[in-house]
Amino acid sequence: MNGRRLEIHDRIMERVFIDPMTGCWIWQGPTSGTKGRGKNYPRMSLGGQTVAVHLVMWTNEHGYIPGKKQLDHKCRNRLCVNPDPMHTELVTHKERQKRRDRARAGMIGQNGGPLLECEEMSR
Image (cartoon, rainbow, N blue to C red; front, side):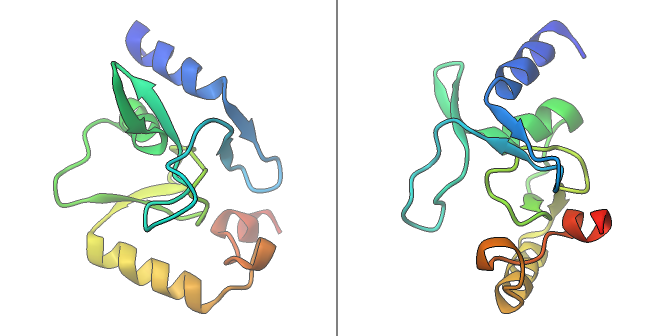
């Protein structure tokens, strides 16, 4: 990892709590707010711009996100910034919608939310 990428990684990790049960890297900094479709996503300032932390972390670790792909939280935790494929994955918009709908239909996990895939593996 070069100097700039390492600096970005370290800056993000300063505000992350690693959940030992799920492996989620929980963002402890600012979010996009508590209302609307894009609520509760991690946000930070980078180069004078407000950016989505999970996208910055993913691109910092894996590179460019192609135009027809979106980053999906497989762990279903919007505050998770873990770039590991167990937590985030590039998918099409259609696949992301299907996963969201399946998760909503099966609200059986923590705090009434869906069971995390990473929780299933730790059992």
